[in-house]
Amino acid sequence: KPKISIIIRTKNEERWISKCINAINTQKFKNFEIIIVDNKSTDKTVEKAKLCGVKKIISIEKYLPGLALNAGIKKSFGDFIVCLSAHCIPKNNYWLTELLKNFKDEKVAGVYGRQIPMEFSKDADKRDLFLVFGLDKKIQIKDSFFHNANSMIRKKIWNKINFDNKISNIEDRIWGQEVIKKRFKLI
Image 1: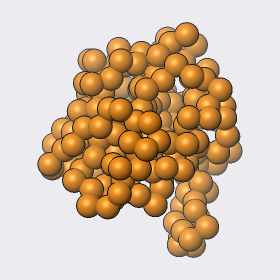
Image 2: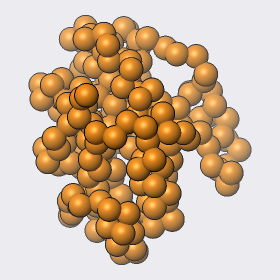
Image 3: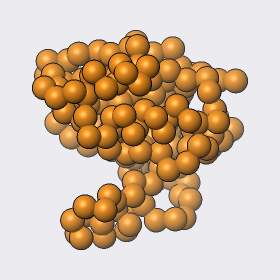
Image 4: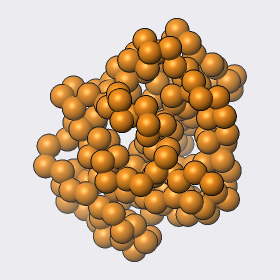
């Protein structure tokens, strides 16, 4: 079985972190590690992560999304890397299995999953999430859209194409552009 490293970027996520980690720990696929990359949380995020059994916690001073992911990936053992936001809680016990099954094709660089709005999400945000993350599977060979709130990538591709360390957002879409240029696929 391949190994998976799950990178969760956090800053003051005590509301979600336990639910997120508990949902990960109930996965049918078991060969994984969880790495928290925390940006100076002042709440109980780190404490709750430790209580849920997370052993690898990296503290960063300056938050940039790609920089945070790259820091976590550098400390990972996985053949595949999951990028997950703490508020994106897996909906079932087959989440990792479903992401991983898309990598049978060696040309697949990354897979991103749906992000479902929370009950308190603003109406405009709900609309946008349902439009962007429909129910249809998309195999992208030209469209470079990618979303790191819930994604899995091949580490061997990340070894050649890291996330941009300097930008303040859309690190996932820039990475998507680079892998599409190299004729990989996104799903």
